[in-house]
Length: 191
Figure (cartoon, rainbow, N blue to C red):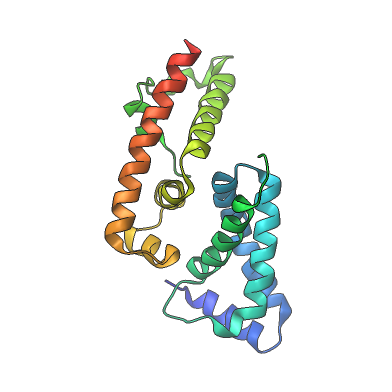
């Protein structure tokens, strides 16, 4: 839901204080870009889509309904831009550790962080997960990213994507199954 500070910034923006909207941008831009990176697979694309979303949010702020959270509303705008970008013909906090484990990865040894190869191994695993995520069909990937990476509840995801709660649950379940299978396959390919 909205924090009182968000509502104050929205009211100030609607009253003509552009600095108030700048504060909303500062508050949510990193989170939005991070989420969009997982959807789009590219930081540059994520930055472009986030910028488009903030511009449209600023223009349409008067249509914001206060019963929804500002970030959820902003994310919905960004999601629509991201879908458009994905559909264009083009070549293209929280973690997924439990999916790593289900796919047969060994849990990270907390004492191995000082090992010289640790950053490289961690980067390889992150890259493998990102690659596997991008191989999942968008309609399944998006709810999974919203749940596992952004931490939204099933109800919030249903509102953001405009789909029934049962559909959210089934798509997340299917996405997890697909992701696990893809991670297992990628893991075997590397052996």
